[in-house]
Image 1 (cartoon, helix red, strand yellow):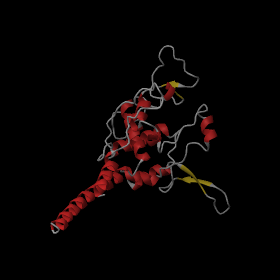
Image 2: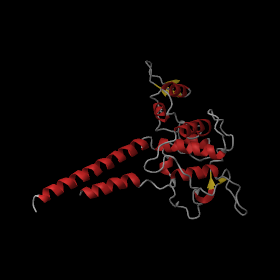
Image 3: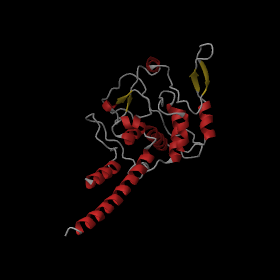
Image 4: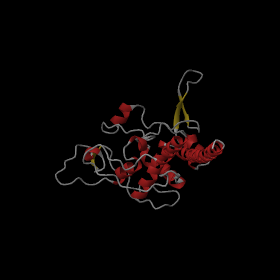
Length: 255
């Protein structure tokens, strides 16, 4: 029984979600393989990259895509100070209320608020995006097969369609997207963001950073889960050794 428990714990820690799984569409190009610092059983988030990814999200993505499961207080977990998080929160307008007269009102965001959605409702979102509905990005890395590699490949994979391929109106060509036609135009390019820390802002760097950020939003507790897994494994190893010693001592008296 204890051997089974030990094997189960090892499996829970070391069998991580695969980021290179085959996508459902038949001729979709396999995602680019990228080595992520937070991958593997002992990986941790690159805090600098996640913070840059937050900047990319705010400068590029937030106009169409929301992060409804992320509160401003969560930004403290990626290394921002409380004052920095408060400044970011205050740059957003939040609907609150009702007030004493029963009316809703607007106010600057606070740490306990969740990031506001870019559109009031789905119809408004579709009307602003040629009928397409931009998905919320909170869990996008977990929601798409291929995980981080897939999202990264989409961001850097836009190209001109091959000869003989006709795009539908308002669509862009991307070999990593099912059917190769995607409603979202190329969101980033070289120098699309001016990093406050001076990092070279190539398209590939920008894509890596925002994917790091979205990997964090999808599982902010990843590091805590891994630490707990290591503790559980160490505990089970010690327990197994102790029980083996007890077994030998008990059975030694019976011989």
